[in-house]
Amino acid sequence: MDPLSFKTISGKKKIWVVMDASDQCLGRFSSKVALRIRGKHKPNFSPHIDCGDHVIVINSEKIKLTGKKWTQKKYIRYTGYPGGKKISSVKEIFSKNSRLLIYKAVKGMLPKNRLGHQIIKNLHVYQGSEHKHHAQKPILIT
Image: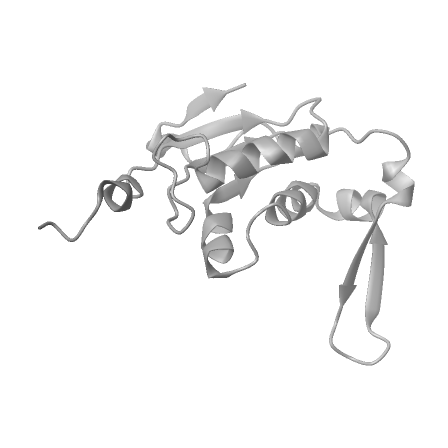
């Protein structure tokens, strides 16, 4: 009997896709990206295997947020030192690095375990419409 099942073998077949973030709402777009890199769109999805695709996100600086999220939404992190609580608004993070907004949103939608840390490596976010993965022949997905 072959020790590898169909689902285990299918996890090795990853395709590269390009998704454009221009004029997309952050949450809705991030959920589509998370679904792709997790592999839930495939019929042979298995929750314990990294069977998702590599996703290249372009135009991260053109992402949209609805309502007053630019000023009211806060990201909180802790440095590990007493009094080391750092609070940043979306506007501050976006002005420093717009790629970080999409990265944080997608990472929050993945499992919080070793598999989630492995899956997030399949996400590649770029500002502008240029990326460096032309050799992988990515497919454009709208």
